[in-house]
Image 1 (cartoon, helix red, strand yellow):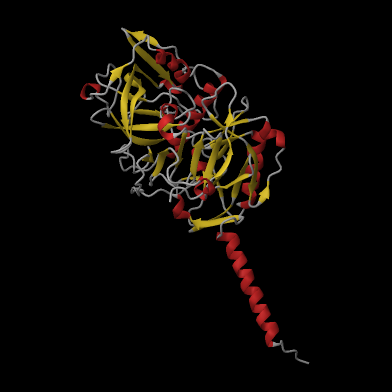
Image 2: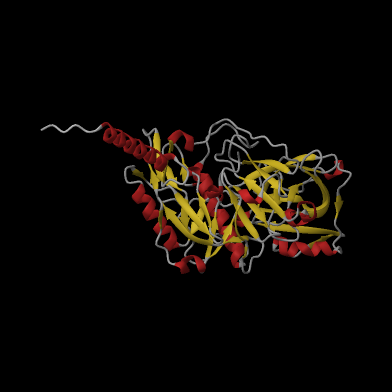
Length: 463
């Protein structure tokens, strides 16, 4: 006997198949899905700059120093090995500041034997700020881990490179006297005791790898836009700099009285934010004050003060999930670790047990792809040549305050068209410090509401 399905039953089957297909598409592509599928080509920077636009007076564009939006760009492909080595040096500098060691000491032993060409913010992003009256545009690497803002100045006594600020052309420039109480701020801001140069206060800032800046402590007008300026801003007018190439200096945004953040508190309310662009070939922004955002669009986690080095911005990681599954990491792994969020370190450093769990789960979710040889620092790499798309397990970070951040895929993988690697690394075994790096911050607006004691994340913050 032949059984004929009723029209109602056939219609129900079609509905179920359609719903199943929609659910499958949601899992692969939708927000909150356990996996993300994107074209492989979308993970690599373009050789052309894609600049963003902003009409907010207190917002300045930022770009990665190795990308085509940088004045340092010479049309050559990014040297990823060099960038990896610079990141190692950056992290060693942070660890030396955290431990209280002399930043001029030799770096710790590393599995990578190549020498890193280090500068104060090795793998950093820069902004262009007007200095002086009339203003002279200076490219400054912005750094949430450094306090002192400084720029190279004429007459440069030794080892300076263009661009150089010329104080003789500014009507608002003035040296700070060694007897001025503000001269004493340099000790906490730089780690060095200020010294007199004649009657003028002089400073010195040192970094791992021999990079340094020294010169006069002075005041000047900084201009962000045609209508937004800060007068009598205290900064370093560098007369001698080592291993500083192609940019003018540094914009210090750390938690210290001498930093740009603290000096501009009256004007901007002890708040700033930035969005690091999705790739090296596009621009993001740095906003002083609250800008146009609303608190409702930002998820906030408590701001933590790091013992011994209060200039860093601390956050508490409470968990990690991969592909929708919470990793089995003991609570004490994170509770006994101090974690800072940093604009200069490229990759997130995790406690060894947490990193091992993350790596294992990620590899399990990538079994269909061929692994390749590891890169310096990064040990989980894949050969995606010949693949037009890639499906990657979603990585979610949980922070104190019930904040959950789903990383953009460009905050998970890093590399070239021949090799893409998991963009995480284990912390040094002899430290209790973890670092939430700038690759993982890509595409998010990261809000530093220091007055409110919190740090926030807003997804798709660069658009």
